[in-house]
Length: 353
Ligand SMILES: Cc1cc2nc3c(=O)[nH]c(=O)nc-3n(C[C@H](O)[C@H](O)[C@H](O)COP(=O)(O)OP(=O)(O)OC[C@H]3O[C@@H](n4cnc5c(N)ncnc54)[C@H](O)[C@@H]3O)c2cc1C
Image 1 (cartoon, rainbow, N blue to C red):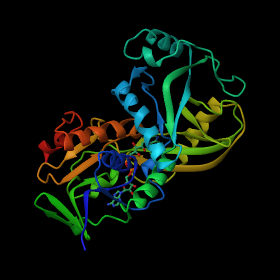
Image 2 (image 1 turned 60 degrees about the vertical axis):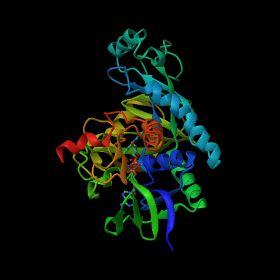
Image 3 (image 1 turned 90 degrees about the horizontal axis):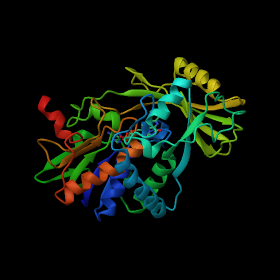
Image 4 (image 1 turned 90 degrees about the vertical axis):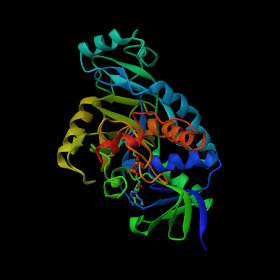
């Protein structure tokens, strides 16, 4: 017997999970298919959101719009799942030198970022525990999503609705019909691929020009006084509770393996030693590859030849901030005749196909 859904979603990382919730909120039925993998970009991510780009102290891509949407989206989903994973927190930028402090001060009245930069320099963090001779200042409107809790509680929820299949998607088993698809006894109006970097192997989306960035993170155990704040100087330290902190992350291009490396370990240790003055133990070291694309914008929309096949990808290093707003824009496009931003529309890559 055929089971009917409005959508099949392939991939249950930040992209697929968020899209499934948005579709369910719109009253659609969803089957989520995800290959259970211990390591994925979403599972390794620190889940931090931060509206300011460091070094230049500029606003990150449409930050106010994204933050406004997320402040409603994540708490509503927390309630639905009866789980806690959305954590607004103070985020302290520790300055590297006096030039860095002056750069910050120079941006305090810049309309691009002033709403996110606090003028309260030299406040907040404990200078015994943190090495901050040039001071620090809080960035406003930051926090982190505990992505593993978000994904695990969502998987349970999708399963409770009869819409979850832990399996590797077999492209050869997909049948394209007029205005629908069929897959192993399941029928849907559309199938949306949310496979992150694995889209390189997808026959309909392997033309997406990825620019993948590998990252490595630690989980450390330490007694730090700022156990509710994120602190950053070269690396960020994100509180996980129970004296555990996520520390990261590195950036390497050209290595697509989820394997940990000695150079990244050395880099993280050196930067961590520059930032904190307390002893710590490394509990965990993990690596994954961010699904960034050329142009660094999400990839959203329908296939140029097969409108029953869609994609939601390209979240790069900012999946937590980008996923809810663009999943919602995708839903508006599909159900309300809304527009996709030209710079995120998947069709931008088909001219070269
Ligand atoms: C070290 C590191 C730190 C990061 N820190 C942050 C951070 O602090 N804040 C932030 O916002 N972002 C961060 N990111 C980026 C973030 O992880 C990504 O933006 C996001 O996870 C991308 O999600 P995704 O769902 O597109 O891809 P993925 O997480 O890769 O998920 C894809 C899913 O699809 C499944 N899949 C793929 N192909 C198939 C198939 N054929 N059949 C079935 N299932 C399939 C995979 O198993 C996986 O579950 C970080 C990334 C890394 C690597």
